[in-house]
Length: 121
Image (cartoon, rainbow, N blue to C red; front, side, top):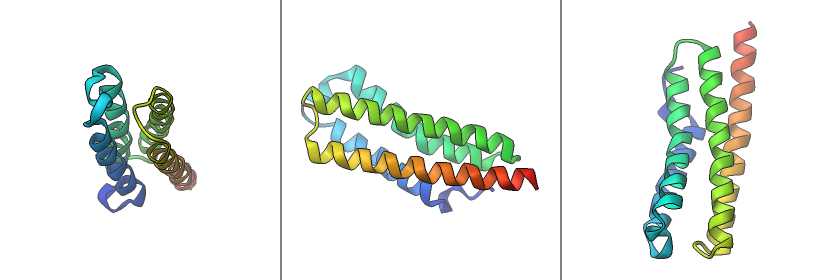
């Protein structure tokens, strides 16, 4: 605990947030302040909750924040689907974000399971 920058899931989610900031700063997406800000907040929330959870003193607290981060991946995925369907992002970009969300969600599941085992011991 306490070394969130060393967690691959944190690194990957931070990179996703940077990527989302980049793509939402261009074209029609940059002018849709509501959707733009929502997807940005959701992606930042993933990395932020991983960091916060890892810095806490107990696995119980950490697991709670990891579940919140996992929920945020579903938010980002939903917002990506909507963004693609209304023409803000192309299929390749949408697929990349979906792949990242799926991978991060799987990594969080493994991290949660790992912390649950440690908590039970």
